[in-house]
Image (cartoon, rainbow, N blue to C red):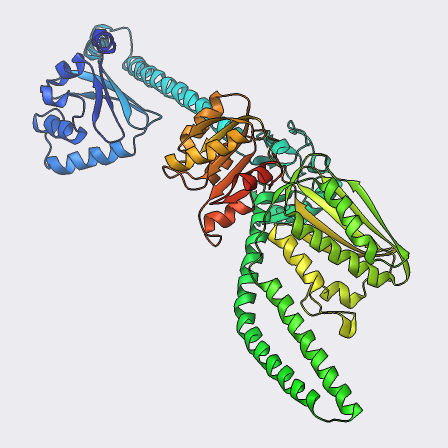
Length: 623
């Protein structure tokens, strides 16, 4: 139908693609230039057509045909809108109007204007009353009008292309998980892709004509302003800051526009930062273990020899003073052995085992465990503002760390004082746990070095490994630890990533596993825990099911699956507010995929039992 329509028009028409091959032409194109069928067949080469026309005399005498063809091909590669008129070798005159296409290539329309030209010449010959100047102007005006009409057509096409390009650009920027904006020289927004509320929840989406300080708030704007001033001065800073509302970590890139304004791109990298912190801590621990394992082995041997020699001395008939020295040496050597054990605990393999944890119950048990070790004059208060829903934590590691902090606070308070443990959520990003006391607080030296291994203010009674072990636990989760003094004493604040636990047993579960045998075994476990199960073998299948099936309450996915996509890609595809995802894998813990998964979602290491699965997803109590 398209070909039939093109054949009805009086002009010759051809369309060549970006590869300089014919896409479409009409019958008038073949008739006008007397082209063979091979040159009007889709796919015919542009250079072959030019060569044929040059050899048949279409362009008059051409001394070097190949050079002429090469010149025309070069012009076609850098195609520009144009209008021209030329007289052919057969004496007829044609107009040639060309316009580029948005996807590459161009369309050209050829119009035979011989009759119009002859009419102009006849008018010149027969009009004695009109001066040659008027006729020349008339001819020039006629040609100009034709060229103007072609230019208007080209401009309208360019306008249409620009409008479509602008719409595509805006749609693309509004789909990005980042805020893209522009501010003028005074700091007022002139453009925004309306994604600021995704990066900073609670912020407005429509911010054009608003000032940055009004949009970001005074605290966040104060952190951005020095870098904004640098961008106004011509630099292109990239920086990170922690915003005040939910303590999200934000990365911002600023680029001057060359006219006094600045382009901005900002994105939430909180999860990336948590993963980076956890990975750095894992690497530090591996390096520390490598460095200390050999030393610990040698020192253990030396301590064994010392204890053996002192044991022999203790059996000899020595005086009271010598016996005291032997006993003191033995006690010191044993203390050295305990210290080596703690070093091994700190630098050895400590695996996080997050599970659905009721923080209320953990804090209740913590108070029961810690209270008997406190003097009568030291009180322990727990301010429990933790979320009611279960949270993914390693309860054993966390409880050990909090007990360590409470015992440190006890030693700081002495015979009387007050210890307070307070817990609350910071948005949906962090769980913040603070242990404060009414002791003398940290000395300036302790504030700088308390997290360094072996630093202690307890003299011979302390190992200097308590706070470093707490710090190690926090960093393994991707969190952070802060020491400070309050008006009443010292405070140690832990920030752990807030990861809500999967829902309680029951409901529809999506199982993503590419091994048929494993899928059967895991499905039976989920069914035993009260779930209805649907299955997929790849990320693409799982994504399709998530899009089509409502009420999926849990996704249990292997990390390595059919195809190139992994369980981590499935995490990226699940929209905010979608069902929680639990990953499972048989990869070793030092595998990059396994390490990356640990800081983004709960991970079950294969093989696992029904009880372990139940503990992780918050179903029946693990046996």
